[in-house]
Amino acid sequence: MTPSNRTTILELAPIGDLGLLFCCLGLSYITAVHQRPFDVFNSLETHYPIQVFAATLVLALGWHVVLRSNGFYRSRRLAGSVREALDVCTASSLCAVLSCIWLWLIASRSMRNTIDLAVVAALFGIMSFAAFLTTRLVARATMQAFRARGHNRRHVLIVGTNRRANSFVRELDNHPEWGYCVQGFVDDQWWSKQTADSQLGALVGGLDSIPELLRTLPVDEVIVALPLASFYQQIAGIISSCRDHGIAVRFLGTFFDQAESKRSDFMRETVGTITLHDESWNAWAFMIKRATDVTVSLLLLVVLAPLFLMIALLIKLTDPGPVFFRQVRMGYGKRSFEILKFRTMVQDAERLMSQVEHLNETQGPTFKLKNDPRITRAGSFLRKTSLDEIPQLINVLVGHMSLVGPRPLPLRDYEGFSQDWHRRRFSVKPGITCLWQIMGRSSIGFDEWMALDMRYIDQWSVWLDIKILFQTIPAVFRGSGAV
Image (cartoon, rainbow, N blue to C red; front, side, top):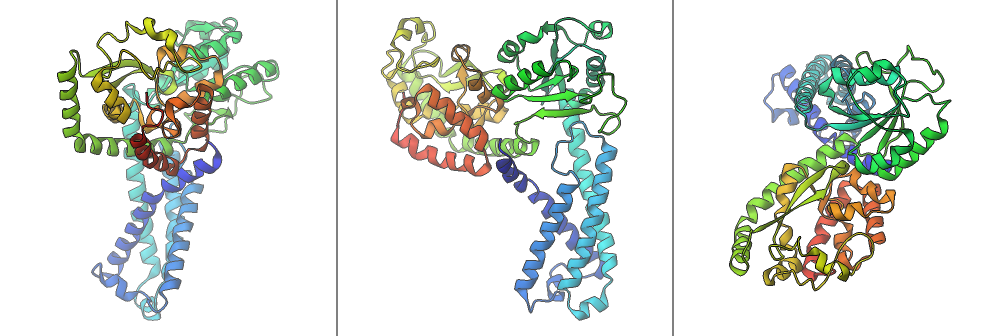
């Protein structure tokens, strides 16, 4: 994801925090002057509404800068709660000072003489500190409990088997709430007996096997514990391979000291790493995208329930067999899942695949056949109108898919990939619709399809998702490229 588009999503996330601050400011003012809520507006200077509006925008901007500079919108997966509480305290104090200045600027002379702005600011600081600390500690406790139960886990591959790697893995094992799962160690041999005896991960391959391991294992991050000076070329190759797959690379320790470092740039009880490569989306981006997916998919499932039942009845009346088609597809982080669609082919279509595979009309590993003899009469209509995709809203609701993202591919197609850069599409969740869906679908060649997926990943923003969703509707009615 490009920095400009990451900024787009990060500007949307603080809206809730700004709303919370304005609520705290209003409550602190009402408490200090003992006025009813609507009387507050009568006590403000309203002869210059444009100036008041401009001052309020500047206040909101100032709050936003303070919150961002105190780390409110970076991942706290490894940060301690004490560090977060200190950041919240600092941010609340600075926001209180800005609020006091804002009140003094917009208040009338009579108002300045009747209230103590310092009292309002102090109350605001206390309220905002309590509100921010409560919401963040509750969110932290919730996410830690969620991760400790095996959810929202990040799979890491450790490159190196020295003592530094052993210390890192032991730290992860002592903190299951961080949500990290070690996929194994990669090295030419066990260089530390402590690491070999730890039983915290198997030696899954040598340094030359990393490209193949990235193709076959679900890996979100690669942690490099090798000495940089001795393994510079190998580390450069690892970064190149991970860039093709859209996988983050972090270096454990310091750049120049090959011995175990006694210093760390991070807080106590956290693991110090230096990021060498990371194009993954920010946690806030995933959070907002996920919240949108849950809300919209749940709403659509309720609204489309009658149509859902009608299609199920149509399938049952026109062809014997199950209503739904289930197939294992490759999802986010190369994790497989079972996709759900309305069945559009005969019941034993998978078994008959070998009889029609030679008729494939597309290039690359994917299979598309416009007049596939396995398609039923009802299935042809459902495919033309994309109504067979409706059950995928259930996949979106449970978290396997997103509303917008690269289309999920069968395992057969994934195994036919010849270029590693194609696999970067698995660095995000697959979706029901995407750029390929609205720009021609099956009429687009495989390489162009993959290029569109890379374009979506690199240029992603909330607005791009909204644009794709709205353009999907006319694309479905046109039926362009539908098979």
